[in-house]
Length: 196
Image (cartoon, rainbow, N blue to C red; front, side, top):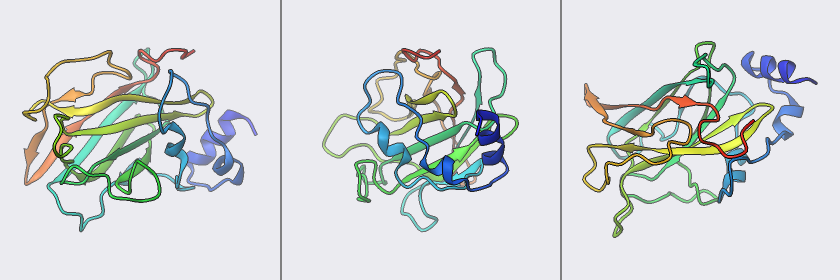
């Protein structure tokens, strides 16, 4: 089965046994827990996914963005994986260090993805700002982590930009109708060592 067939089948929402068993290689340097991006991944994905259950305590938040190529073209069929803490800053147990607040979305024809969740809490007792861990699973290329989504309005945030793996992860969330809105656009391969 070639890459186009796999991607087309994923986009059509078909559950393919070959795809379920396939794991893209980890690229971009050492990554603790990168194999966990595949642990529990649903066979069928959509461009809109849920990380935190509706009943999860915390302020509702929407994370959305567009995944594009280095040339600025929308990237269809790319899986975005995200996980974060609960409102208390802890990873609720679920069999691996990523916890149970995690989800997968696959980009649509315009490269768009969306997660419905809650705003995460900062790690208790440590000076680590609120953040959402994010990874890309790019069919036929690999999986790699990108810069965390971080919030400029968090007093623990040092308000600096790093290497910008996958584009800028620092943003100022807006609150509309009681829901935090966060945008995280992703550029495939940007500042990812070994990306071809």
